[in-house]
View 1 (cartoon, protein in one colour):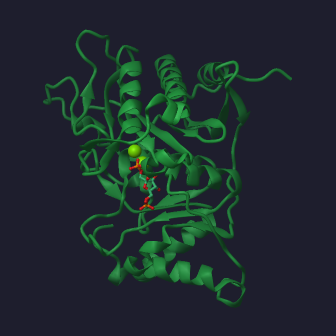
View 2: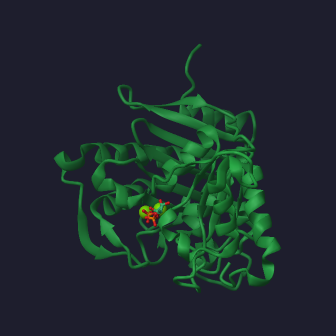
Length: 346
Ligand SMILES: O=P(O)(O)OC[C@H]1O[C@](O)(COP(=O)(O)O)[C@@H](O)[C@@H]1O
Ligand SMILES: [Mg+2]
Ligand SMILES: [Mg+2]
């Protein structure tokens, strides 16, 4: 049987399933090509001088690694002249990046976390790129800017494409355009993305959770209850033993969940009560939530479906609970039952 390339998959999504129009197909090809270039930089490691920090901080006060900047530049450069975007936004840029006048512009908005799992870069642990595509939908015709931050502030259910690229032992591109989840593996000899799994499904039940346990003493009661019950194992109320994994690269943790099920939590915690969570809504949580839902899983912030959250800022943060449906629903129910004490930041 002949292998299916990313291009062929996208053409089928356009022509057979009508899931995407031609400009979106071409945009996704450009993003996938940029990910290949990032994979080459990641692979060079110390030989390519790409490890270490640059001595600057991003808008969220996080130290920027060289690869954060390199990946951001690759994505900007590759997408600037494609002709399908109105603007881009990134974890590594304070404001939006409109397409410069010298290039043709389009109707789409691209958001990305150019390098996810930055703390893992220098120790050769899997990292990735996360992206989300929205369509510019102007509700207020009195706004005269060709594109502005307000255009980006759409709930995640309005995404038209979302994906991530995982730079691990294999380089893997995971994509949804609202017609299930497809996984492509980079054939490194041919430099081609090959479809290796389509219509991915996440088991509804799991015995594996992912959370940074070092924050346990800071969690809200519903999260504490859920994890305590998992830790109690066979002898506890769940009546079964649970395993734990925490890679500290959301892309890698989510990919494991797509592969074999599980639940991922980065919850609100009481150290900074006004901050809803660590992860960013628009370019981390939204694309991952859509991918997870498209694979039959669920994603909430403890009280609300992530894809229904109306963003107020580009760099807004959110609590994230995603993965196997029955487990996510259980944690969400624990939050509802504890509603009077639920953190107001959620
Ligand atoms: O180090 P912690 O607190 O466990 O946080 C890990 C989380 O932070 C992140 O690395 C944040 O992403 P960035 O590296 O893009 O800032 C997630 O990928 C991961 O789930
Ligand atoms: Mg990230
Ligand atoms: Mg990042």
